[in-house]
Length: 202
Ligand SMILES: N[C@@H](CCC(=O)N[C@@H](CS)C(=O)NCC(=O)O)C(=O)O
Image 1: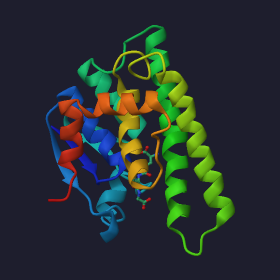
Image 2: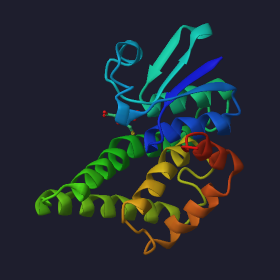
Image 3: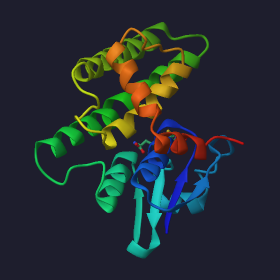
Image 4: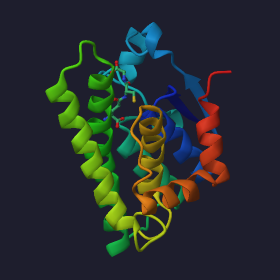
């Protein structure tokens, strides 16, 4: 049985959505980050970096951190969401790494400096403009296709929770029509809705 250690954050949601889309059975361990449950000795044994998500599959002797690696594992485990070879595989990986390396870190820093008082204007504006630039890159890609790598894939799963978070963090992307249409398309998927729901607080 796959065990998922996650919290209601964009990276945690990525993993839950990946599991739901892959249709793999799993047991969810919901961590409370504000209570420091990701800093306990038990959790640090799973991920010495002290971050969620972590996926473990004891039958395979596997303990895996980093949401990008987790999504690739789920895709290969299920034979879905990532083509096995060819240009589309690499287009998918390109967009997945773009999410993990740019969208997540830049959006996280944007939110950090957005909430800081007194506001550090330089840092806030730097991350705000970088997030807007990145959204523009995705808008260009989504103008002529339904999903980032053509067909629905782990790249779309990696992005959707960050866009939902950005919306809640006062970062509107309504000026990017391709991105808005893509967002609605992805949110309509029942597995994506389930992935969001499993981590909601009751
Ligand atoms: N590169 C990691 C980032 C993981 C990450 O930053 N997780 C956040 C939640 S979204 C976390 O655990 N934060 C707790 C902390 O840093 O104390 C991934 O993609 O999984």
